[in-house]
Length: 146
Image (cartoon, rainbow, N blue to C red; front, side, top):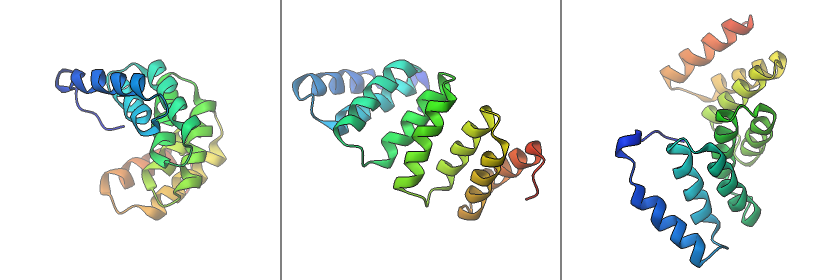
């Protein structure tokens, strides 16, 4: 989930999406977008509920699983976050950021070996200096060789 900043976030977008899913409850994309919007406002439980509806309707978009992992992480539900991130990397294993978030969730659960593996995969996929620095710091905290 990308951050808009609470004050700048267009509430009318949420209202439009809520209306859209009311009129067409089978619209997976609208549910996924609504879930993302709820997450941006810090309404993580609502985000989980909307994203789960989106996934129930269409489980193929990786981004819905990634946003679900983020929402669960914010709720402190790290096992559910791991399951969402695992599905996200299964659907698109090329995203370093997703592997990084999977590593973070494993680390919260104390699964340091799995966290290390995920972080190393993230490093192998990224050329982003900020993500590289962050992942190297996480690996250092875990006592893992880079």
